Image 1 (cartoon, one colour):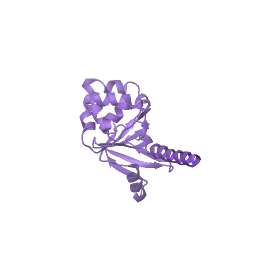
Image 2 (cartoon, helix red, strand yellow):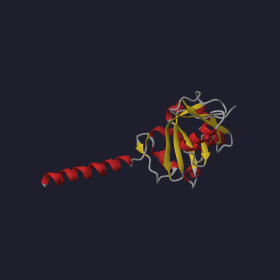
Image 3 (spheres, rainbow, N blue to C red):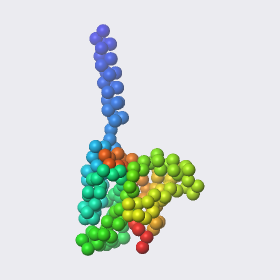
Image 4 (cartoon, helix red, strand yellow):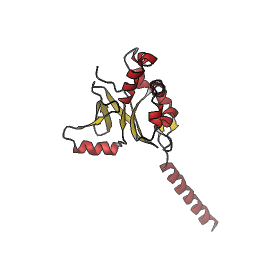
Length: 186
């Protein structure tokens, strides 16, 4: 009887642990992303997005990312910013270049909640293998499939960003982590 009770308890414990493990939130930059947080709050938690957050603040876009949304962010990592042409980020971060910085950042954002499932469905319906979306800056971005492995995003200037983490739920949208800063055509 005691052994049966112990086995039953162990089984219940295993079921509970499995249920909790399946319910985990995504981890970005070493931190759990909470669905109850807005996009800006979650980006601010990520150690991989400190440059992006600093740029968002310099451009005065915090309120946009804290607002009701929905918004989809193609969030470039610190590494992506470090691979920009030398001196460009420093130039953009100067107060006199705030509007130019704002345009670059808004080019990495789309109004609405675009999940990868939605994008993949549109890709299947597409005749040319890509889906065009309009950034919050107003210029076009193209999303395409990369060898059936994951999605990638193309700028008008032929920058390509690979999705490394996608569909991170936030209270006002989604975060997709990408490995490049999408830039406008000169």
